[in-house]
Image (cartoon, rainbow, N blue to C red; front, top):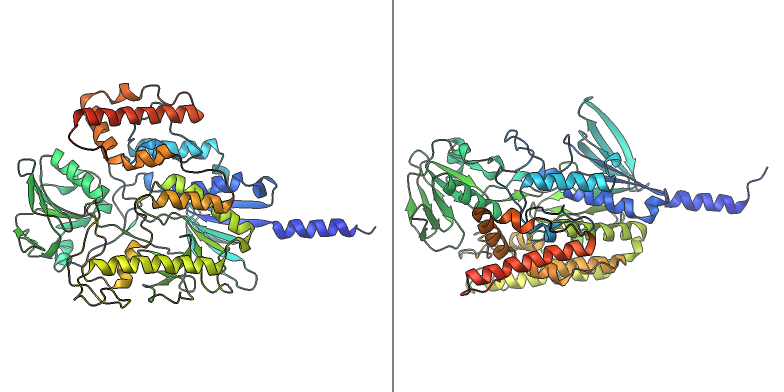
Length: 533
């Protein structure tokens, strides 16, 4: 019996539309990837399948605790960590934190939220735990990815083929060390360590004076923990002016210029001043982007050359991945690595990450389904425009006499680097222009993250847009956190959030918005002399 040609054509069409997708990681980014794939019509029709591989024994990524062992530890999570964003702003847009949750919850609450997200959307059947990805290769002829994984419990390897790869492994594990003269001697003498190893003040032993290097969120939290433990803190903040606070138990200093003899505990700062008697130094100096499962044929480990033109290969400078269309898709030799073959999610920083991840994934699936939706010419123009804008900004900050100022050359600057509002360096002293651009590439300033999310959703044809209240509360996050801590110290925090969010849905979200506005009003009443923003 002859099979009708229409059935054959339909079978061929369906077979062509079948896709297998590999997600690397089951932390915040990997969970968002699996969830959005499951939401797609292609998955519901049985055409697309998804498998996420997670090296650890549970989901949660950075929010899953681990001891400070290993080189490096599995997570930088420390005991006192709470979110630095109010959870209604931080949450996935598709799933709110439970009613009555503290506005700035501890890490343990966030981990439970991640588990609840996975359970609610039935993600766990698609996740293989204790299964690290060892390597990935792509066949340019078949267009398939070969992924080699290890089953940790069985100590055996397996090779699996996929159509698409989503890189969602997170970027808060490999510590970044400054190249300050004399630091290596402190590290070798165990007088200094990176914040990835920090868990609580007991880690400093008998040290009564601690040098904290770095003014990002973890550096600020370290200072808070150490002061609460009765220690004296010398806080090194790039570009800061000498200042004494907390009855001189908190000393604000500028960038460390040199570490002297570790036995004397002496350091020299950029203004020439010195501090001695430092018992230990902790380096809250950030982390490197790292893809141990991607070989040099996929990503080159180097700072990319100056632009234009765009390089034909993909680069990982450890600060940024370049060139990526929309901070997600490789824009390189399409014969070797098509933009629709692999997606990098979760690279932007200075953002509310969870809602951004869902927006990125909707754009990813749009490109996977319709590769032509991404216009390579326009994407190249957008990348070069961003590059030139950053180059102009960085060059303008450098003195006219500085090589590379106002030019496209890769010369080092001799002036002291500037800092962001939180004290994190915009660039390090001695950075080439290309390295300074790399540092800034995935950093979103002002409201750029919200414009980016809206643009991704518009590109994907999705109706979601960032609500005005979210922008308002993100801008007020510092005041909200300070006021929330005052409520906690006063024993009023639990009463303030009791029952908030119980209405569920949009009404529940509005209850949280009203609470945050009440909190801002309280701040204004307590501090009428200053603006809440």
